[in-house]
Each structure stands twice: as structure tokens, then as C-alpha cells.
Length: 150
Image 1 (tube, helix red, strand yellow):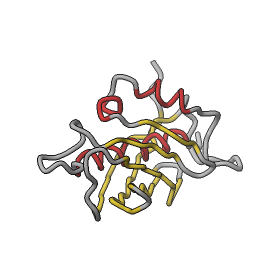
Image 2 (cartoon, one colour):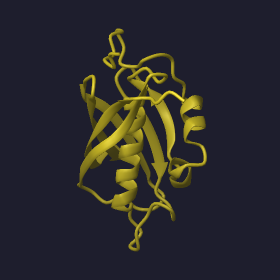
Image 3 (cartoon, one colour):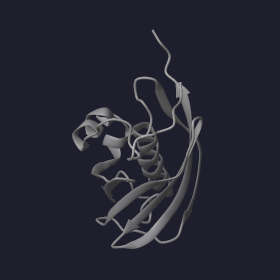
């Protein structure tokens, strides 16, 4: 089977924001307060408010929360780009640069766009911004694996 998307859009099949919320209910995504806000033609976008669960001791966004958000948005985007009945997208590698602090109460917006969508791996750039300014840039590589038949 070929995992490469061949339709004119990036996404394999139809996806909705409600479906993404249902898929992540009760997970770390819920715990951190990450909400999916847009499925664009070539990007997946989510938002998160910096609060008690996502800040570090000095009251700024925790770097780990930034990475969790980047991996969440990039991994789900990768899953959306393959046939979900046949393939699973699994995180393989993530790296990031934190470039600006974000205080409690501010909103962080993450946008995942593909750099490479292949049969076995995908590479995603995930930009985290607050008030229109870059706060973190991450690159996520996912492995595309056949789903196991039960």
C-alpha cells in the first residue's frame, strides 16, 4: 500500500475540528487545554492559553508544553495526510528553538505545515506564535506505519 497523498489537497479523507477534539478527549491534549481551531488546505492550527498547567515556576510558558503542543499538532496533521484505516503516524523525532517567552494568560497558536510528505516519513514545521510573534519553531518527523489488523 502507498501512503502518499495523491488528491489535490494534503488531507486524506474528510476531517472536522469536532472529530479532532473527540480523538484527543481525555489525553494530554485535553489536560493542556489545546484546542484545534482551523483545518486549512495545507495546515493544521491549534491554540492554547498559557496557564497553571502549562507554565513554569517564573510564570512563563514551559518549554515542554511548547513541545507537547508542537508534537500534538504535527502528529495529528501527519495522521490526517494518510489513509487512517491503513496507516498510523507516529512521532519519530522533534527538535525546537524557543525564541521568546510567553506569560500566563496569553494565547499560543501552533500551525503545522508539511516540509516533506513521503511514503514512510513526514517532516512538519510547527510555528508557535503569540500576539503574531514567533515564540517557538519546531520540526517534527513522523514515521508512517501500517496499522495492525486484529
